Length: 619
Ligand code: ADP
Ligand code: MG
Image (cartoon, rainbow, N blue to C red; front, side, top):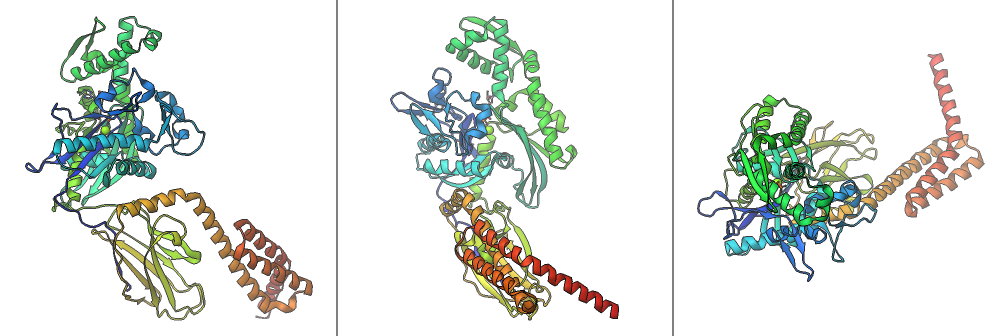
């Protein structure tokens, strides 16, 4: 058995260095650490006791940038230069967000392309990555200010439904802010960790994480087995949250106070005052039954009962999503062991009741719902720092792993983002008659051609008994064990041949290298498809040349001189196109050769069939 050991992890971390956990939220962001004394996850608090940093960026006329509470003040008064909800734009093109363009009060550039969106503020263009980096930079400074020590490493959370582009964008934003992003963690995973769910070995659980924030709702169903967090399903509504609750209160008060929509359009400060008061009322009603306040000297009031009826349609929608998520996860509600509440809006008692009723059990709400994700990120950071040795650190592979097949193509056995441990096996065969050796080259990366990926190892399984091409069955198997070590083995199944070859182990990639390889694959996605198509056409062409030559060898006498000449010209043309033509040219040459050979190939077929019949008759 051929065996090689490859270390895929990025190496150990220094224990002394602080790694912060960051919840980069749509509405609010937070930072947490494991407290050095109490060893408990703790939210970093400023001297003024604030923990939440609103995810809002304000660009002043003089070019100064502010983030957080200060920026939030300008949300309604200076909508063009105050950026909120940038998380919604991460990894998105204008086409992705065009349907919701009215949601953004600032200028999202319409370039009519699939390129990533840009935002224009005061004549300057910003990408969502840059904008997010302003928030992360502010969080980093805040952490350094509170901890009185440099902060360079972080774990950042993202929604479970974030795709690769969105995760990558988040990572890039961290790097731009001067943070080494050690891990991107799913928000529901972090929330579970904050409750200690999934922290014990051999633990098997199904967990539903209900996250209702300011502007987004999502429900994730996770299956936890031995420290592996698997997302069974996600569902939700990216435009549903506490903001809708506030709006429904504003609408109700507008009726009560006879304020028209037009009036609110013009009177921005009244609009602002109403919204802020509505949020205040909502928060008050999470602990009380009545709210009384004033807006521009006019009294406003709201009972909890009225509030519940106002928000009921929104809550109904979330329950509907929960039901879909359960169906998609292919489980029954009774199989769910734990329900975790996340997001500031789950503080609303009516929300809690409805969720609890739907799942038929009590919900976890002991931890602050707007802090739980950041706290879990801190737990994850601590595991990464190696301080929590009891927990199995399980991970996903950052890049695809595969082997080189005909024509230098990458054949992926373990796709990127597969959970670890992971294994995969595939059968291959020989190209030539009596081939006794097969070369296995192992690569890591996302590109279609191995030459653009990173070579990890190469070895030969030799001593395969001579057999016709295509008959040997060589099974190549990949196993990534819990330590992130890749073991590759090769075995010829017919003969049982296994072979051990010494391969010098190669060491892991740094995060930067992983990022570069992924970025490359994104940038070259189009080229790669074309390149793969060209290689495939070339392979097809070579195969056709071989079979044609074989055929000519055996059946020369049946062909006319003309046919012979035409075939030779077409063969030559195909060879030429394979060596320096485009994919279309190669395919054209293949078609030409096929056209020429078709008549005599058919003729030969007839003769062979007749022969066979004759033989049969004799028998
Ligand atoms: P996000 O994950 O979208 O960044 P959060 O989880 O911080 O958002 O949730 C913010 C939302 O929670 C806001 O709509 C806010 O008004 C709401 N919220 C915060 N505290 C309470 C409370 N006590 N009662 C009701 N809603 C609350
Ligand atoms: Mg959140």
